[in-house]
Image: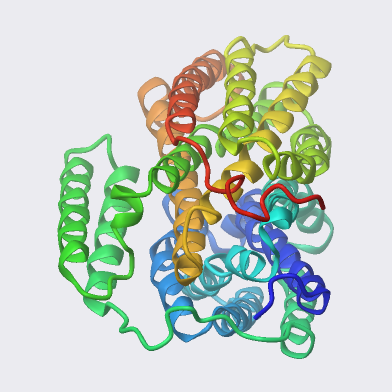
Amino acid sequence: MTADNPSYQRPALMVTTLGSFIIPFMGSSINIALPSIGREFSLDALMLNWVTTSYLLSIAVFLLPFGRISDIYGIKKVFLLGFILFTLFSFFSALSPSPSFLIGSRVFQGIGASMTASTGIAILTSVFPPNKKGRVLGINVAAVYTGLSCGPFFGGLLTQHYGWRSIFWVNLPVGFMIILYTLFRLKGEWAEARGERFDWMGSLFYSSALVVMMFGFFRISSSMGLILLAIGLIGIGIFIRWELRVKSPIFEMRLLTENRVFAFSNLAALINYSATFALNFLLSLYLQSVRGLKPQEAGLILITAPVIQALFSPFAGRISDRIEPRKVASTGMAITTLGLFLFIFLDEKTDLFTIVGYLLLLGFGFALFSSPNTNAVMSSVEKRSYGVASGTLSTMRSVGMMFSMGLVMLIFSIFMGRTPIAPPYFPLFLKSVKGAFILFTVLCALGIGASLSRGPSPILSHPQGKGSN
């Protein structure tokens, strides 16, 4: 199938952009509604945490298997079924009569989200030629970060005026639009690994190990958490050993062992998300608790970074079609490191305009890193591995998001324990925030090394790679 046909490209860009916005929007908007959900169902903090975690964990667990399934049975087919599942269980979540029903619906909603997240980038990479990939992947990355960062602000507006269930109702018209557009406008199918076997045993090893490891990570301050984390890591080792032996693996280990660009680009993505995802969580608590801002006011400040990223991500993507993506992405990681470093000095008197300035810097850094890094990942593999590559990159994002939140919870448990975020404890809270930003700055600085270590990308050596847009 041609990779330069506008009749394929416009619908593909339309559905993947909408999908890349609504999935992360769902993941981040629900956080601001947790107090309302807790009051309605009389939930404690642990159960409320599962409302969010069940969704993120489902996405992380199923991304890689569905990436492989899409390569075998059809990328568009998996994308479409994923949005049907996501939309259906958004409907069930909105009607939830109990907390267990809501958490169960969130699990299946996350499974649907994993099917779309593992295939969206693969669709774009399949229908656009190499000299246009950077631009469209930049648009996709902008949609992802805009969804992640706009979620708390618009989720707060919806919750305040229409109740927490309205967040799920919003998914329905968007979901129906994507489903219909995919069915009737997105032509063709892509299954470069058609006929190959699916590795069910490898999928079981991978999913089980990741679930156990994540449970351990969220309880890492206890001995049981350390035991679970160790078991999970052993499980990952068994998975790697199995994948090296099986004929048709869900993940080709040679992509990590023999493809330097793929391996270090994904490592850089994991580090970037681990160092930055909890930013909005920390600043939301700071702005609303320490500075006394209303949710809408805090949201207007926090939307600074995604607006800048949405503006500059397509530009950064186009640059990465012409300039070595390693250089562009590493520059973005360095700018992000500087932004995180500046937040170390946050205190109760920091000027709000100064905070906006820091967020402007971070948004620009995010833009320069994300789309060139995605371009490098997808251009480093063959067509038959587009689904796996897309799923791997999305897995790095999901796991990084969970690691980021886990690190914050660990720091809070060390400095604050179970004390509330109230005026008498603001000094402890600010100490925790400072510790988190120190850790994130160091982590992001290490990410610069991972980004630079990937080596030259194959994009510009492609015969079409230097063409003009």
